[in-house]
Image (cartoon, rainbow over all chains, first blue to last red):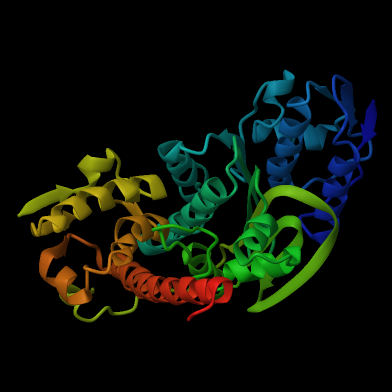
Length: 293
Length: 117
């Protein structure tokens, strides 16, 4: 079976919709040799390797064998820099401009591996604009909030991450993508509310400060609301895709849409605006900490 | 007085998982059950997230006997960095609301199912 990949799939609604529709169409394929043909691809947002890697994980779990062909030199270079092609027999090459974030698969309990990844791949890059210690800590913490949400809510085997930095664009965006397959947010929220709710509405519900599907003695919630405040101040963007829901937060506005197919997992894509000279004072004075309870 | 160094209990400088938060909760809870005062020491914790705190601290409000007044007297938080303090406030506020709501939610559900006579 040969699959031709179209050019310039973007981390936007259409790009996600295309990939998710594709995986649904092929979800029953097993014990097959699947070749992905890159002939038409002259540009690829490399952060999407996190999603492509998840798709490969799904296909390989059904005993399919994956191969790639006709990758042009520019794309091959990017995908060797971020190590995505290494399992396919390509040698990794140095990323002299340090614009790639390595494609990685983490097991859900690998806290220190993920922490080191954020420090080494993201915050310590020479190209990364100077930032305060506080900003670096905030970014790390916010990413961990998302990571924790993926691993406890999604019950996944692997968390796939990748990212790409575009230093030539005015706002110097860095796209960072985290994908897991597992329980989707729509299912979680519908079960919790005991009524069927749309995919995008379910994501929005989960974003409201304090809402959580966790039950029992842990009150949960809050995790994802923290990053929303930060992204708004940073003028970045956050997209969350789960089940048939597409949810985007950008410039303080929310856009919701319904995908044509269902993704059994969660995609989180964050755009950090690294051309940001603001000084972040995200803390508020907490009065009387000695009597906080 | 029990002095609990979080870093030693979770064997990490990263307070980033619900599971580790639950470990802390269980130790704190067992002390408070026997009215032993607790010093919860956050020294050396580099990253802390709300999911951890929900489990470690927020869960205390699931027990009715732990009132705010009681916790202020019996549980002291030490070496919490200034910029992490806001997380505690949010988590505590949320836990108070959640467990108050939970009670009324369960009561309403029971009333709906079984009547309230």
